[in-house]
Image (spheres, rainbow over the protein chains, first blue to last red):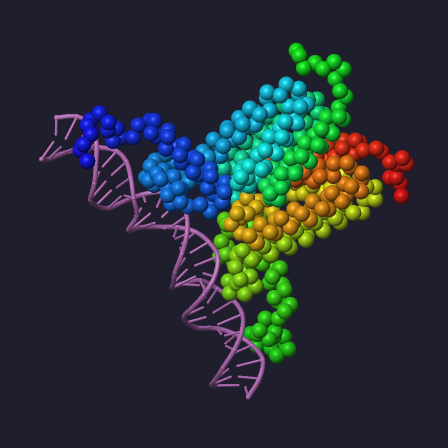
Length: 208
Length: 208
DNA sequence: TCAGGTTGAGAACGATCATTCTCCATCGAT
DNA sequence: ATCGATGGAGAATGATCGTTCTCAACCTGA
């Protein structure tokens, strides 16, 4: 027990900032997996504890209430989700192709193991009328996604930019419930049709 | 207290079939209102009791468990919801106009007081991974709505019939979260655009 | 070695919920 | 009027949950 030099290797008993950050991530990983898989209300804090391996006391030091954990989880997931989408879509240079790439990304997501629809829509159904903080997180995410989609749609000269967003939302929700990734293809086809309803640019002015 | 003739007016103590049917409706009315408003899990059976005025014993005689009540509520709502949609849409004779009328009906629904998105999508988010019976009810409703929409879309010669369904789903979900009925207009506009992508009928058959 | 402080592990607490049970008033039939 | 059965009102039950608390173990610094 006292074989190794204690003074050099031991962390000071108080938890370091680095440890705190690591625990936070572990906790958010655990919460995201379980909450998305089974719903927030269906997962108890004791299960978060055993799945994360973190003592309840530390969990509640990092998040004062379960609601805070759920909100922080949705918030981090939002940033990651949109970053992943942007990383896939932004490199495509042609505006029309870029817009269509959104639906290729969705198609990939829909077949990912454990896909169970939109985490924010699910959270809305579960907690939208109970937790104002969760509702705000859902609204914020949807607004951000909406703004991103319509920006790409306008860049591609789609007259009905809003429709592209609605097609994406419809595809996500439908693929979630049916478990079938086909809605991504159907939505993509419809966007392609909408692209054709706008006059093709006389001289593609993608260059400024 | 004994002023009126008792023998003629009194119901036999055992509950009649008619009374059972009435109570069932009262219960489903109450459950639908409260479950839609606040979520299934957020409403306790005691609140169902006080809101319906029915004794707990009778509630459990009509529905052996809360889950059964939730499922029966979704089932009745499905039949009513689709009947209301059909009653609005079917009388429109021109297939293209009929398809567009779906989104007028949605627009009306979105501004109805207490509108809070799709009851089935909300139930999916809350109980989709917990209750197989609820999940089945959600799948059944979405399949029925899908089949109805795509039938109308094909009758209107929309090449991407699936897209019309996805636009409707996207509009419902978005209007629910944002509280803004605009998605109905946006989806309608997009469907009108998709209608134009199909060859117009040789003789515009709007007149019957 | 001792004192002071912090942590881990999980028991305890208080609330809530779905479901069942108790108790009594009331009914029809005799 | 009495009997047997039924129903109403809500208390009791047993389980679960979010959150807090206990307490022993262990650390650092003196």
